[in-house]
Image 1 (cartoon, rainbow, N blue to C red):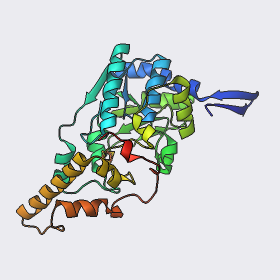
Image 2 (image 1 turned 60 degrees about the horizontal axis):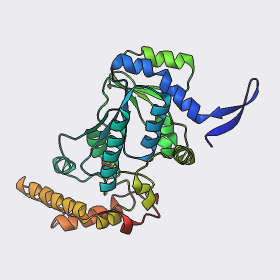
Image 3 (image 1 turned 90 degrees about the vertical axis):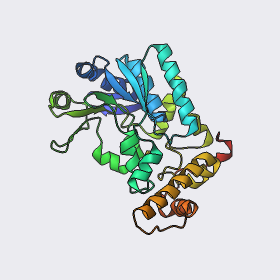
Image 4 (image 1 turned 30 degrees about the vertical axis):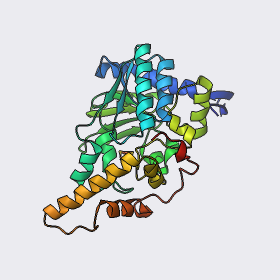
Length: 301
Ligand code: SF4
């Protein structure tokens, strides 16, 4: 629930998560403006959590621009949704930038000589997580998404270079704010206003404010990632429903085999099809079943 009854020093009170999230955004706006006259750098992945932070930034009335990193492997529904969101934001007078990568996913896969796998997701860092350097970013990161995030992500963070340890602050008190604002480490400063929200609270907010969300959720998707992402348990079915992407994987894998032969190596697979079948066979895929219920027949190819 977005509103909870809590017990404080002076008795019970209502803890309003929306008001707290708005306060977190207002709190660091001055700092965001110090780093850039454009204010916050709001990261939009095209997923539901991004839809929430975009609405919260409008409600908080903080200066910001929205940024989306196109991966070249995005689901077509995500590409169309992001374009609609860009048009909607520009109508509201809020800048919205779609960033295109220097190297496509297909070229990157060939360069890395392997397709992305659950334990080798090199593409996220190269295609999805760039941008916002020396800015104050807003992200929709939440602890509920993984147990690892509970231990290594905070309400505010400084993602610094290796030489300076990352500063992570998990409460809203004055001392922590001061620490965040005065830290001289270079790098991204990140505010995660909904870090303590549950999935149900995210949907409660979306329904309360009738916010547009990626239509993939209507098809049963629980996460919005790239087509064939190794984190998706049903990547093989998704690729069967989107044959152009499947063919692109097979073509690229065939090129990777050719590259190996050209380098004097012995390929492990006879051809791109065999390589592809191995990759989607589940050996490199997650074991959890977090995408149950998707209806691929309704997804636009
Ligand atoms: S979402 Fe999946 S496929 Fe897309 S960039 Fe990240 S790891 Fe790679």
